[in-house]
Image (cartoon, rainbow, N blue to C red; front, side):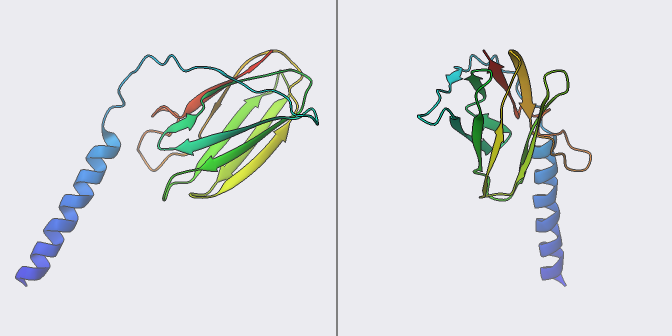
Length: 144
């Protein structure tokens, strides 16, 4: 009986620690992220890889040229957590969505036609915790 009680207490402690970590405030940092300029290859395709991990994208700011196809390889470096890449701007015609399981990769293709800056983010959210976007998993696509 004492062993069971110890196991229950350890389990509750671990569970409480996880909840406290998940609810901890996300520090507000001033990001001065460098914009990664994506150049077209010899086939005219602008290719880049984005690493998706614990509430972040790397790089989180990309610059591409309008009118040329873009091919993004989305690689989820997380051990357990799935992530999404969601970019939706009806006015520009951009509708890109991908869900990538932990440890997996997926490629998305699209051709931006309008110039501007567009936000992409992860839509994942667990129960009553903050969404991945609210925890900082957001980036921007600059179309020049």
